[in-house]
Image (cartoon, rainbow, N blue to C red; front, side, top):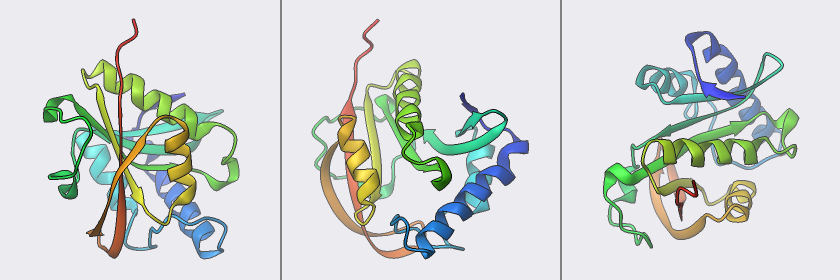
Length: 176
């Protein structure tokens, strides 16, 4: 089940962030995120305060989280988007994390499907995502679900210097 996060979920989301950082430090995954810089508890707290933090819960355990909103990263402006859409029709998925303990079991796909359905409910047909160029697993997953890489932009991202940020997009329609 994916739902809006509540204050009681913050510690579990922060634990997910630490799991990702631990797996990165151990060389098990490559996200390009940096412990104590991004993502951190303040990332989840700010999203909870805005009302755009979501969690994936199964059997009472938080196994994933993501931030879904219409806040486009500054480098999105001027990017060569294939679909030029008004801002109010654009939905963005940020900071998708799935516990390394359950990766490969379809939870990322489940979160992407939720994101797409949620975007349509909000009247958004243009979906945008970004990821660090180094995060080959995320890039492959997004590509598998129809997201097209439209540009790679060098930037300082969430306090991390020297990031090559991959911009992805997908246009969807309400099939109902």
